[in-house]
Image (cartoon, rainbow, N blue to C red):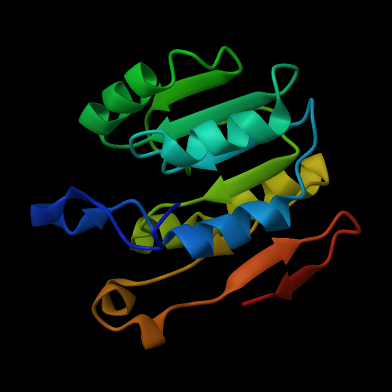
Length: 163
């Protein structure tokens, strides 16, 4: 049994695991299959990266990036049993994971990151995969009704709001 609740990773920074049902929905939108590759921006402690790894199987690849060095170390430790996962400490908007089938962004976006949003769209366009991402703001953290929307780039190349 699981509970659909936020779990604090670092309460003083208001950092949590993300709402499980929402992340499950985003991951479902990726439509991942065995052997595919996925770029996970905002790996945190590695929980959702492990789910992605299970979906792509041992023949697949997960590049999990986390900007917070301490969290990246925790994710690396937590994901030792997943040979198909590479954990990178760094900025998910500037790191180039190479060609991937999908990109999952589970991270806060600041103004600089928001300016780099088109780069992620270009990467996913080149790979003809999926990019479901919730573009929230500082205000959205205080008031969820202020949250952005989720985009999905279909394999046919069109962007659509889906949430």
